[in-house]
Length: 535
Image (tube, rainbow, N blue to C red):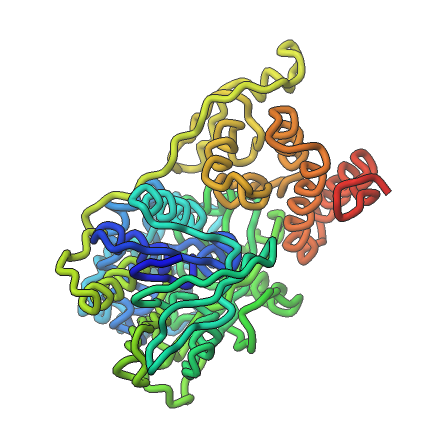
């Protein structure tokens, strides 16, 4: 295969760059070692930053965040719930911090409005009464999965070739120039060469590994952040604790649930990050300082992501929250004397578009393209769900009436979703038409690929019911043979279990026992081999 630009990495930055280059008319191939959303871009708290969190300690990042916040609300509106946010100061916190913070917000251009505390407590009655100051900011909630899907769909519509489950195993070099990459299909093992005029390393926490294939060292600081998901929206708005950034001081409403985060723990590898029991209990204790009744809510899942931090001076003296959240663009021709390779490192999901624009400017310059970036003014689009009929229980039954009716999930002011047709996932209002629209994007995908594109199984039951419904519906619709449907069902349930097993206490333990009864006893999944056959 040949192309002008090969992008390695299919997170928000890589897909954002693919979209940017497509709008400039530059031929592009993107490869991603897993599915979109495999890495950091889906493993975060879902906060579209106003910049307030960084105003005091990291003003450059704060300025980047507020500019991109305004742009993304315009061009990525289908992926964003414009909740607004609050910074709340508790009586036990540093009394001098609000003054320093307000000064820093004014300097960085972040609009802040102080509001009466009673107004906030009326909006969020579960919040602690120990709030003594409350400030409103333009925070929002952004769905990382939906964003990646919109970027991929929009880029593909413009001719970008996107290859998931494709890993770069080596970079091809000749006479001081990178000429392409050898790739491997992670499902079949097939290898192929992709030759390109320029390669962009946008692989997030894997950036150092990719650069090492060319003999280049990038000193990344990998930092794990753990998060907890609760089965209700604790608040209809983002809640930030007004103090120097620390653990468990952000609560974000995410569709039907809430996410509490996060921690900061240095790690050696970006692969398979898992929260520890110590981290989770620590976060719960801190979270109760904001929401005293937090222990009464069911924790449905825990997960972790790895921040790809980069200290621009590479002095090695900074780590964790001390490293700036801004990004760096590394031209390896200038930095290392190696033509044909560029790396973009650091940054945040909120600033992915800016990262892609600046990288696109450098790419265009190197290729002699004079078209400017258009991503700040060109809205992203998402595929429309398809109308699909499928055999379900008799319409006279209560279940069938419920599943064929309109489903309304209105959670404290969120955008109301009103799908019609056969509902597969009650928690997230995912219809069979939604699944088929996603399947058209990944014809050889599995149920986990469809989950990342539709939110199937991401609600309060974590797939207890929609897992077998989706497998059965796709089998009955002749999309999958029975053995493949069985294997995919196993994989989806096991993927959900990875996050559930970390929080097995209280009502979630009861839910997990119920889920096991469905899949291990009723459906007998434990008696299937790796090919979906009965043992």
